Image 1 (cartoon, one colour):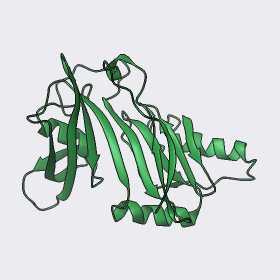
Image 2 (cartoon, helix red, strand yellow):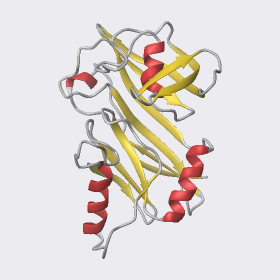
Image 3 (cartoon, helix red, strand yellow):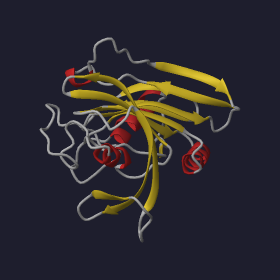
Image 4 (cartoon, helix red, strand yellow):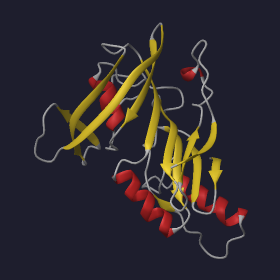
Length: 233
């Protein structure tokens, strides 16, 4: 875990692929556990530090995760995600190019919780939720394509299903594609940028982090921005 930005109400961290955001049945240390330990040590907090989970990433996905450091921030950030007042940018590596250079994918998704798998439909059906994903191709190389996803909704497995629907499941995504697995057991999906309204100030916070420095993400001539910026709301 790497801390990207912290203030009295917000904690942005970088999640490595393979780490669960919250404790699960594996017994592995979660990102929430690590982040809470950091806060307690950094600020010499007596007792258990509060951290609110306002969004999540799948375990094999890397990138930015935001925790709320106060209950007020948790409530307001949860509302911002629900009301789509946040901006999310993901990077993905696909084995082949989508049918065009950019587009908007609108689907209706239904989750099979028993199998932890999501099914997509072109029209609304019982038990489905609408998902909207904007995408564009950034770079094409032999055997792989770098794509940017901008989801307007936050459905379970939304971008993994979107990649499959574009005819090219994410590299390493054995749940939605034929494989092979990547060496680190990740899927080639990275939460690159997250912009949210600050819960107590009239400004927006934008955080960017580069994808992992492994071969999967190395594209000729491609550089990835990192950093934090604050803008008026």
